[in-house]
Length: 298
Image 1 (cartoon, rainbow, N blue to C red):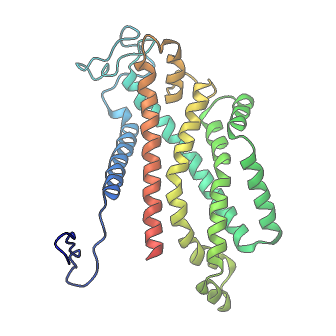
Image 2: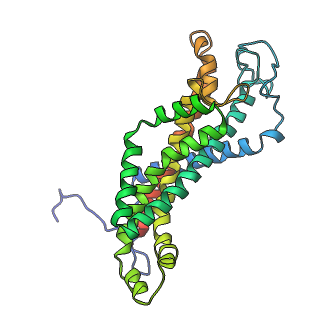
Image 3: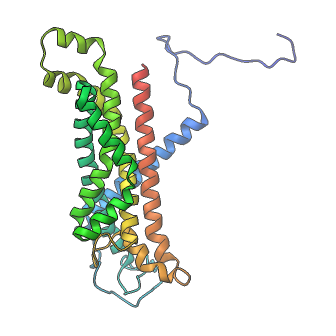
């Protein structure tokens, strides 16, 4: 080594000889984002669950003058009041209940139906696989927002209509993912061994394949939930979401859109809640996917 060459030192090795994982600035940044995202989601879920126990006024009864600016001296008016004098904080918290309940129920329907159909199609194949794939392609080609608008127009805006419509919309995504992983795991040695030992198809599907299919599907669940939150907000903004006076984040934006020039915080507050929730769910989904990929690689 010459005097002009930089001196490099090998990374320290633990006593057992294994190399410690490299911590890069990008990895550290992702870790912080994942921690902040998880904190936000826990906070939102906690507020939504404990909303009736919190010292908040009714979301449907005016508590002061309309369009009151945020006042940090009182919890009820810490985010101001809307166009009818109702507490923005109360409506934001109860609006979170609507978004989370609708999103969780719709994702549960999509997850269960899509996983079952995808696993059956990937395992049995033949004509059943063709029918399921055709159904998936048709659903993916059909505009989801148009389907939701049609259901809301026919059956009327309600929580049930939103849950069923968004659940049907999410089925093809889980279906294709479950089918792809089932096709991959069906050709593995332990599955062929189970067939050779005379195990039933039901046992192979639910005891051998399902535990390996669930992790990637679970890591995709927060991302689908973020899409559902956006879709529910879009429908509520168009006036086809949850009927008034029950609050939703999209409905709050719709009610305040005419006052955006004079009172922008009325739109900024629910829009920020949607942005942070969707961003956090996507970060959590990416983190789970990276962790699953690493575990599979090892």
